[in-house]
Length: 391
Image 1 (cartoon, rainbow, N blue to C red):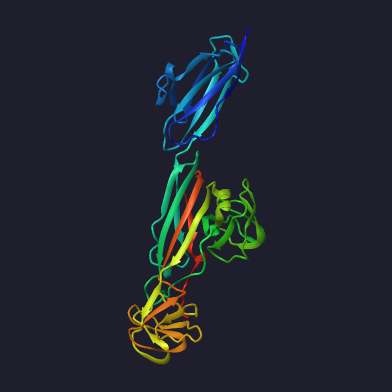
Image 2 (cartoon, one colour):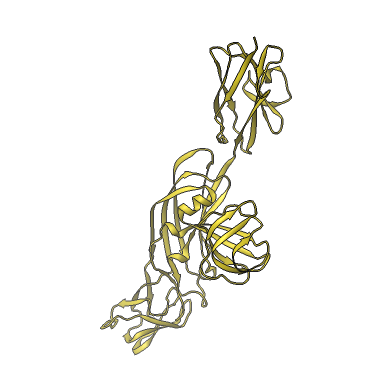
């Protein structure tokens, strides 16, 4: 009487790059004979004796066995592989026996992914106002596994020291989750005019809720977000009508961790966040008498616009005294204009609150799932730091 093989069961979820083991079960009639093989896309065959993969086929690359008690159970060892590969498990009835398989051959594939790196970096649109950005922080792991990995970022950003942009940094709030974004650029495939739908060359790493924040040419109408994506036609439906020229580049932001997860599969959350501004002190360069002009031994870090409060010995603060402007910026000299006339001696130390030359940020993030490929997540400095101006 013909014996039948019924099924092959093996977990098909993605393998991490490190050595892994997968149990398999073959079910069928008592005594049903089968042949099992495992091969990679590059024709490396699994040796069931040595439990390794190698080029070239031999008898050891085929497991011949019989089902006993309704099933056969075994384990396949998948090696460490940093490049990513696909394994195909092939099950067939042994043609030299009276065993049959309904589909003749059962094939199942398992992918193995290389490690991925998530990079965390500060980002600003006001690059002229900052010295070089601090070094990025990276974390490398497998996209196939779940984690509970803490990532700490401690960054110091500083105002550039020049007469054009050296008007300080103003810490206006503490960083929060929505100050973290994934940034993506895509190209428009076909001009649109006052339309909510736009076709792109590629819709990778985009998700419902992702926001368009910039265009390489033209302008945005409002703050359009993605309402739906047709991956087949690469068409986005936006929350508001836009006019785009063909071939322009759109900049997208997935804002906050929920949006980032939808866009690229990175699952993370913010454990803690803090930003502090270094104290800003200046020294009076020459004595002033009932004058709003105050000469300083360097004005860098001082912002105009009445955002800074001036404190110090001899400062008249009958009402709060602020800095109206920096009339003459300079690294070692220069003059600021106070909101109220002051009489101050040369050498007086002034304490200015509301602007700084240095902002320090410290954040702790927790990653529970890594994306499928290398990605960079940005902390948008401009969300919580405003660059100072001369007036």
